[in-house]
Image 1 (cartoon, rainbow, N blue to C red):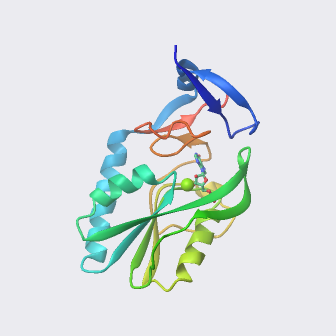
Image 2 (image 1 turned 90 degrees about the horizontal axis):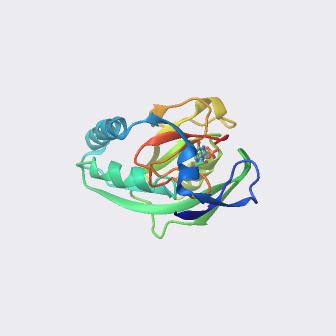
Length: 199
Ligand code: IMP
Ligand code: MG
């Protein structure tokens, strides 16, 4: 039997639980967006970006960790020449609620002036993280800043923020997979699933 050290961010954030693989599987309530649906949407978004920015200097900025899978697939769907960069921005959660504190825990290692910056994000929830990240990056004199997010939960918004492109809009439930985690697990699921809070 495989035992995993499972920490949950939901409910009791200090809870340290040993879970079996079976127990982790029970946390996957249902598939919300399939691998095929994600691939088709990314192909479309990649084409759109290629056409819109062809011949211009593009810098894709992925927000770690959640967006690493999306970034890997999106950059390969873009045919126009582009560069990639990574930064880590964390919004701190107290259980299910964002505490509203956004911190850049790993900054870009380069100058972004002279680039059209496209921020690649996994999900826009309250909007606080990206609101801050966009403000910070705009202050560094890029040619432009736009945002592509895989998922959007507009019903959860606490600040006035809108992504330029959102591949999927979902209702208010917690999702895992395709880079998104709960307690650092499930990022490796190839699809987006609803997290089962009772299981
Ligand atoms: P925001 O600042 O509230 O928009 O927070 C966005 C960040 O919270 C995302 O980049 C995710 O890391 C995390 N997040 C928000 N909703 C979910 C979810 O349903 N599943 C997993 N992570 C989430
Ligand atoms: Mg994220």
